[in-house]
Length: 163
Image (cartoon, rainbow, N blue to C red):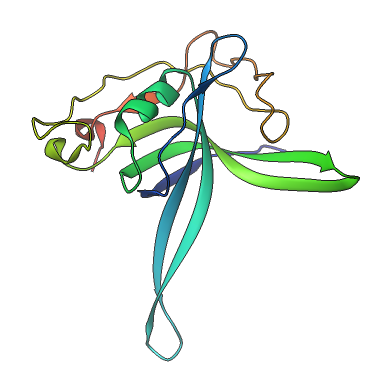
């Protein structure tokens, strides 16, 4: 049976990224993304619903997020779902999150909080090592690269959006 695991999210960052490096020197950062959905109820009333999603970024993408992304920044993330499971105090826990493989910085050039009003630098596509933690806050292992040494993801500027 075939399977397909792809996620595309567009939302606002809920907290400033905290860039860390694992033992082998690979950059990793966790960000929260708030994704809004608006729908009409049976009575015709519009209801806004916000979903909060945890996203893990690796490699150069994580470094760029640490440099250019702040709380409130609009982002598009493309990646895959990953279920983490761990046991704590005899209780099994699990958490569904997104492993971001591609990040697009949205908004105008001048909106960058670290751009000093001179316009935000536009990062080029960055290769990204792929990997995920085996358990929450355990970044000692990373997944192998399934793309023959080349990353499928990275960072794209606004000009790369096809619509």
